[in-house]
Amino acid sequence: MAEMNKDYNPDLITLSDDDGKEYTFEVLDAIETDEARYLALLPTYEDSKKMLEESGELVIVKVGEENGEEYFYEIEDDDEYETIADAFIDRLEDFFEIDNK
Image (cartoon, rainbow, N blue to C red; front, side):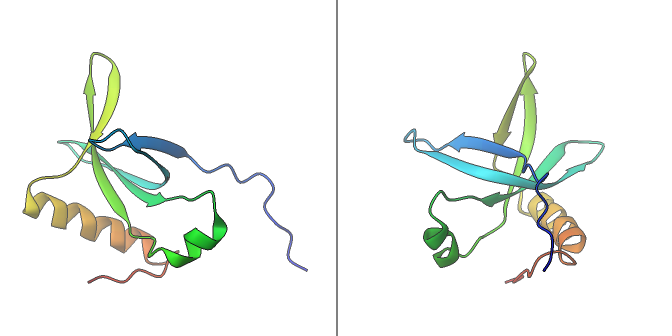
């Protein structure tokens, strides 16, 4: 029988949408360029049944800093998003089944 990794402690962050609804994500990977830092996030769910029903879509955010506080925002430039998304897919496809549509 395979031994479970009891030391696994995922790096979780909670983000709020414009309506104040909170979502929890696991940080899968980070990429730092000369211009910015980016995170690849995977939604997490309290209910394991809901987790199986969801697509598990990868969420990519850009990390900013203001007054010593980190904040996360969407990448609005399509070319920047595609470049970063491709980099994350290349890095993560060996560990996860990624549907690159």
